[in-house]
Length: 156
Image (tube, rainbow, N blue to C red):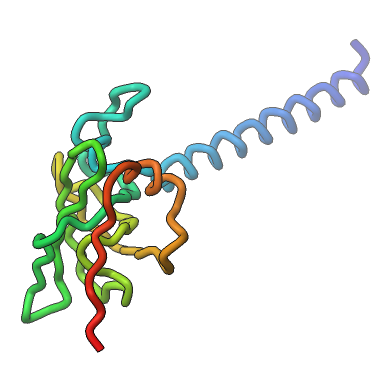
């Protein structure tokens, strides 16, 4: 092999190796920031397809309906806790320290983002409530299929 071809081979090999390393590092970094969606039943029993349960400390999103009578507010701070349920019967407690959305209420479908702190408890850093009577994220709609939505009476 002449020196010119050898030099080209080394440069091409170095570029391919460097590009592969960069792609690998990007994928590794993104893997740690993925928030997977779960329903309360999937957290308790595991995913339907694989049976895999989320690990304690894992970041995730959970969607379900706020169980009536479970919203507990701390009078000294913005801390609130409530239970989420879906049509599979799994119940998960969500703890949140912050201002809840205006549309948040018992019997309402919500999505919470946070970290799993125990087998059935989540420490949320964000809580989202659906914004009108018609729309619901597809994942939450699937999780709540067949359940009656409880509506609170508006007082004028």
